[in-house]
Length: 176
Image (cartoon, rainbow, N blue to C red):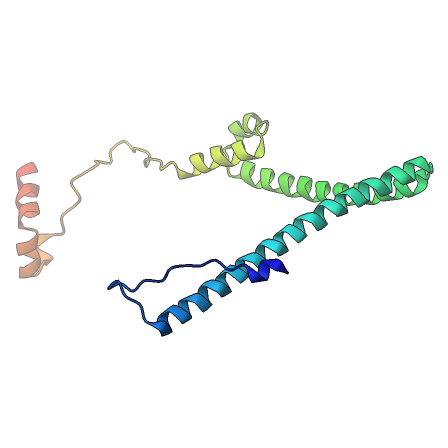
């Protein structure tokens, strides 16, 4: 416990260059508490690291003892339980990937599905997002002019509508 006796001395100065006794005592107490807190935190972190290291050593020693005793049954049970856990996780992932892949391929045109089905999941997601974000232009129909929307019959317009659409009315008469 010699560490408790060691406390750093931190000079405390007021912003004006002088300090009072009460302020010095308060900051000394705060600095000593801060130092003690850091010391305990560091000690706890070192202990946790040592525990993790010892646990690893313990498991490796245990496995080595089982191998020496030729107790393959215990080793087999241990490895088979790990294997079961990993295979169940792998099956869940494969099921997820298959469902995700099929849902992504459904959003793609049929002529592209075969080619895109060979891609890995990340690339397939990227490509389908690009395809779905592309804005298509409306198809052009023969006889449908692009612009010049039809102007409402000016005899049925109110006076305010006639003022607002006067340019359109004049242009419709010029084109006819």
